[in-house]
Length: 431
Image 1 (cartoon, rainbow, N blue to C red):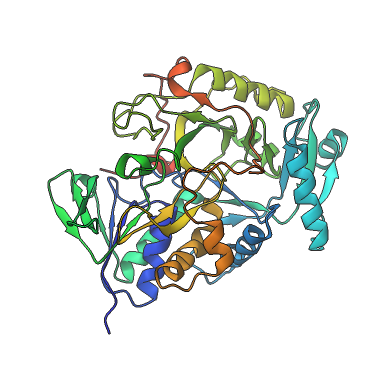
Image 2 (image 1 turned 180 degrees about the vertical axis):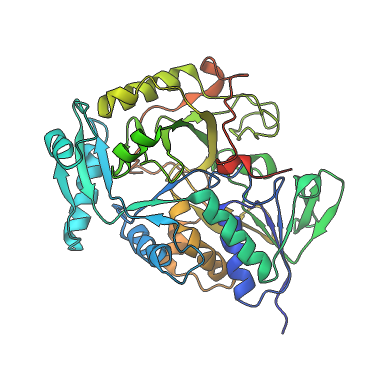
């Protein structure tokens, strides 16, 4: 018996991983629609790098992270050579020491070697390139984590899916304007900006920060953005900082070691919403970089990232940014993904809502999406990733609790984009 045809709306991490795993499980008709070709500029995954780790207070994510890590480190996987094991320092202040404590307790329960607390003096002794004072920081060291070149990883997986039969349609022919339903509420496909109707037996929405623009989801999915900046280091600076670990201050931001091009990335952990948009009133949706190509990051966050950098490496704090951008993702109130049927419509499924921690699961998350479609997903993960009808959990255990701000309430981001260079993954994709 032949497998049903599948239409995937969105070519980010979840959509691409799903296409890959569908194609490897015998689905002969798999189509991905995206406004951009791979790696899609609007995808949260299309970035210079992302943290790869399995340190979670929730053992279900720890288990999933371990499975994904096997693919990241395997010399025979399509991701070979993209992972850098640098270690990861999780840092917190008054709002986040509880998260650190729970992550530490689970690490000890699982007998993970090397996970320990570090003082500021410990950090500066082990990595002399850090010369800041780390004022008021609590730090937890995880030696097995690292980072992956995320834009390259997304591109590799998309090409592997295509080579195995999945079809990508991009440009106006891939830009989904609305979903299409038969009488009775069954989703049969999508209409794109060129007027085409794309039909399939199964429709999967993997639209991330654009989810609430395509279905009623404003109480379930909130588009949330992190400001990203990149510094171009001199060869001497790149050599000096090449061995630093990732530092993830849950209340300020993340700093990554420089890549092979001497590019050092920072991103803010103080997130921004976009409720005052022109497309979906009452919902926060992401701003496409195609629609707002000249917008950059708010001045308030620009200065906050410089304070963050000054507390670690003061000598870099005033260097100019090579590029700035807003990285939009879908966020849920319980911080879990949505891999489930859409409850208001037949034949429509969600595989999305990375909640700012989904990328690391790129190699394997699509396998779980296919399991969900086939009724094989375990009860534990089915419940974890179910539609919650907008309910707010009492204990979300949010590692990034800094109060969210609305984009329009911040200053200086309009018409202030620094484009950067062709070495940046978000410059690769074309409409």
